[in-house]
Image (cartoon, rainbow, N blue to C red; front, top):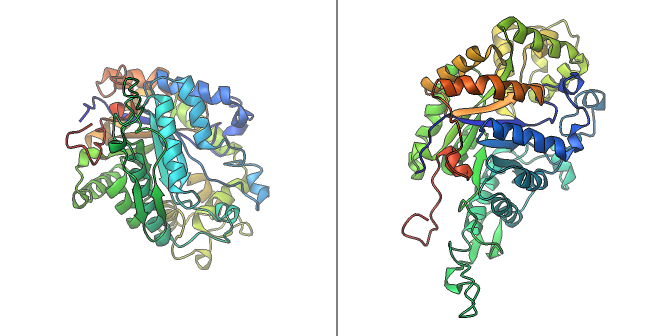
Amino acid sequence: MTQQASISLAILIDQPTGTHPASWLHPDSNPAAANDIGYFQRIARLAERGKFDLFFIADTPAARTDNLHAWSRFPMYMNSFEPVTLLASLAGATTHIGLGGTVSTSFSEPYNVARQFASIDHLSGGRAAWNVVTSANDYAARNFGHTALPPHAQRYRRAGEFVDVVKKLWDTWEDGAFIRDRVTGRILDPAKQHVVHHKGDFFEVNGALNIARSPQGHPVIIQAGASDTGLELAARTAEVVFASAAGIEEARRSYQDLKGRMAKYGRAPEELRILAGMPVIVGRTAAEAEAKHQQLQELMHPDVGRFRLGTDLETDLSDLPLDEPIPAERLPQSANLHKAFFDGIMKIIREENPTLRQLYLRYERGRKTIKGTPAQIADTMQAWIEAGAADGFMMQFHVLPTGLAEFVEQVVPELQRRGLYRRDYSGTMLRDHLGLRRPAHPRTLAPA
């Protein structure tokens, strides 16, 4: 096991201008950033200057095709680079930071994903990570010949088999299989190839991956499922989990629950790093940080606020008045898409009965933003770590690049001063940063 000397930090990129739905309207952002590769390279290098473990790209394989009155004001995933292509460019623009991208198991094939991420791992010198998702919107389904997503449980069964096949393909070749021996005239050792023969409920593969075992053995597996089915898949296969608990006590219970599931799959708790979602706004004073957040909230159009709520509640709210509560009969009984977000909204409704306007201004799609001085933000992060609520954080910055720059310049030194965070990278691979072992090849008795 590589020694892990600090908390883990990743940066979440879902919108290039920042995670807030009105970030593109903020004067510090660049609304043309989505197609500017130099912009993404600068963001990744800035995070690397802050010694982040991981640069993580969220994605869905679809543009929205309806409700454009709202999406025209909130262009999330409407104009996005394909993640693996983007990671290939970032591999050459950075030297240490891990590079994670989202590829759906519902609309891909295991062989393609295995080959893509093994390639990124080679291109980056061992810094690749695959975020395993089942997709959560029907826009994507319609791009692939379906009218709607399959049921939640079916998507996760497919995902579990998908990950198993990808891992088998990553082990097509043993370490050192490509011997490149000019004396014998043999470039590879045939005995070190292991053909995959798999026939399951969803996939049939009989073949071999045409790339050497990657520097990390396996690229790191990331997941974020919050349902019981998703947690079981994470306990069995994930190495990084992006968690979205709203409070420290809930996060601590979720942390213990997920790590407690691992033993039945023959895994130790230290084989998984749980990163709590951590949206932050840094200010010289708490009042300044609050004012920054309020400015963003006021930039958000009511169409966007109402539509974001409706998306995660899986119901249309567009005809409802803003200054009255949502009628009970308009609320679904359960979620098929993002269960954690649905449950979070319903909790606020049950406990506070807010108006629709109050609800969308309150709702943050995950954790509540931490606003304060560098010391106050470091206090919060330290409290979560010391409470056993997380191994690190998936940082979310409302406006990029300024939010990340302020964090790197002001909060990172405070974390380092407290001995919570590395001053430099201790290795070159993502597994080094995270303190995760390199998987041994199944045919190798000693760890590779």
